[in-house]
Image (cartoon, rainbow, N blue to C red; front, top):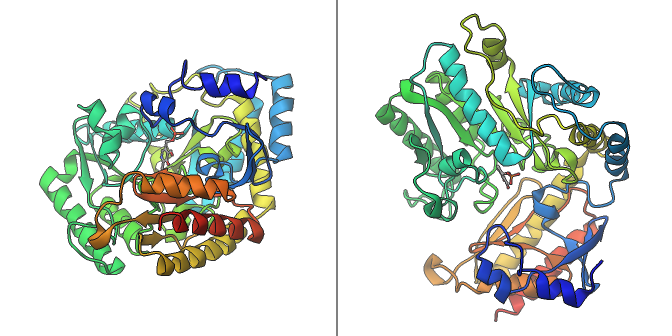
Length: 449
Ligand SMILES: Cc1ncc(COP(=O)(O)O)c(C=O)c1O
């Protein structure tokens, strides 16, 4: 390895970081992470902390998951790559598809289309939705609906259904025919409604209104996260996702659950759709499918949708979509091992218990620090603290970064997104890890006063 001085001096010289300005990376050097084990990461100066970000919502089983590492190593020896485009397949991807079919059976999802990550999965679901309607003779159904505050990656399709201007404005014009509904975000919403159940109903009415305005026969699909993640961890009222699914079904609109974060246990349920009792038409997955050790994803497809493609007699069901790395054997091997380990550890149980501990902890921090305007969570290991000035005004821009920096020095890596401090640790964190995260946050917040 190059020495620490070289690495620090060169970080922003020849590389651009995602999600920040190149000049910012030069001005504010990032933590350079060089090692990790268990739930901890270590930086180039030897400083070791609990990773309350869980990589990027993906390292659910921590950094020492030997079965996944072994599966990757063995697969690299056996078959490091082969495509599954028309005419070829591989043993691992076939096995994985069967495993996923069993895992997602309670969600009504029985087929898999493989991708290289979350953005690819979203793109796939959007495209297959349009094709589904074309096969059925409703070619006019091309539009997409989604939630403001939703995050669906940064591909052109994903950005178009994305509900945050930060990921849109610089790249406009985006895909035509994408429209957004208010999010069930009780802290700030256009209805000025703080009751979650009432707000859910108002957002559902807005959805009905938008469908009536656009014309149901022009809409291909609605996409949402079961719990909005990158938009600031917004758990909807339990009536919301079932309400959206029912409205979609009534109008013949496909319902896509973006489960890139929520699949595989993070919410304390095996999937976000199962948490809310919804059966989507597509579920987008990625991230924790390989514990973040290999870029990989899968779009799970409902039996009813699959039948339309498989029984087509019009010639319109040929899938003109796919990626070089769709069904990558190393990713598939990683996913098989990861799924087995995820089930063996029964991770939703710990996610729920440690989620409750963190939820109680951040609720107590809110009572202590007026700078915390809102805390959100209560469903497993997806939590956020939103900083705000008096009367919910935006906090000074530097404040969340200050909290993060002091929390890092005090033992935990947390993530900043706008005014939000987001917690998404591995699902295998211990009680002591959660206590460390809370004490580090306490130190970070105390430093503001
Ligand atoms: C809900 C959701 N969808 C899609 C994506 C995009 O995934 P990727 O960054 O792997 O393309 C993300 C990434 O955080 C996500 O949280």
